[in-house]
Image 1 (cartoon, chains in turn blue, red):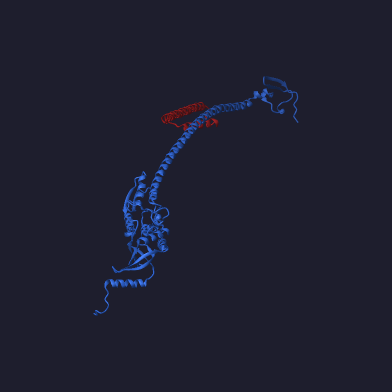
Image 2 (cartoon, rainbow over the protein chains, first blue to last red):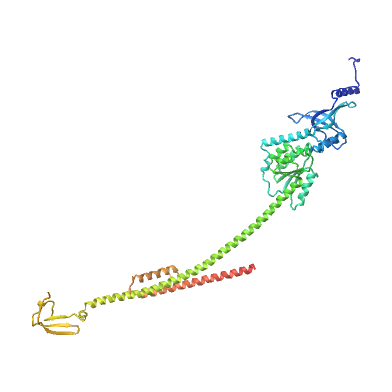
Length: 419
Length: 76
């Protein structure tokens, strides 16, 4: 080993590396990467965190670089983020494009990026793009409407609540339920509502409630926050979990203007945690009111029905009374008529018999010669024989003529033949 | 079968048969008086039956009116 060769002290080496780096990057440069380790320091005056790059296809960090945000730059960046409506702060997991100074700190022998500015449009674009990709994916798999097709129970009583304990979303939701007169049963699963743990913890909670058979609805709540805060709920895995659940999911994430992918895929989404509670209370109240109305309707219908059939019976009774009287009257008239007919036919019977007898009598009378004599006919006899021809008498013969009241004796004077 | 057991319609049928016989003179003179007497008996039976039925109907109506009044009083 040649001791004449230049030997650096540690400081000299670090110093020289620093100079080389500074001469290579004399100006500020734009760098894009994912924020990491920021959240745990976010309340510090200066923030020391990392920018990292992940494998494009896998959730694997392939390169990391330390980064520093000094207070003055931090305030400027926070201001810009707020004005761009990205949110009030940076956070772990989001992608940023930042203007940096590559810096080496010789005493520690490390290099880092001093962040000076941020491209807010880039972050917003990234968030929007990520969100859009998730939506398209869910749409292509037909998952967007799956949970919406699950019927919501008429009376959701047992609620599986997913949120962070004692958070705004937790308290607002429960307070609103307690204000109602209804006894909701709450099963609670504590979960982060911000940060990298949101995905895994919300998914675990969904898995847990998905296996509970007596949970009527699952509710996910979170209080208001910036777009980047709420963007934790623009999450593909959470969306997929909800889509494949057999229990309806209700969400109340953020405030009125926020609409995350979790909201989009849920069975019903409300504008805030308390709005979800109100929705559930109203649903139970509506059901009870509906029951009351149905009960009143049934009572009225039953009363009307009874009144109608009583009326019908009454009419039938009147009709039967009237008809039975008519019937009896007709029966009476009928037998009266029969008796009249019998008497009338009896008279006719006797008259007929009398007429027949009279007829016989008349015929018999006609045969009696006395009756003939009384009508002017007479019988003339000669020698005791009735004369029927002039040939039976001669001139001078004595004859006897019998009339109705006696005999006439005479002598034949002349006989003359009629024509 | 006694006459108490004979139905009204059977009585009426016998009566009509007698009427028909007399009308058609399909009857012996000697038996006419007997037939007329029988007809009168049958008519009496019919009248009694009608009277009885009428009374029973009136009784039912009377009872039903009483029940109506009772019901109304209870409701009041």
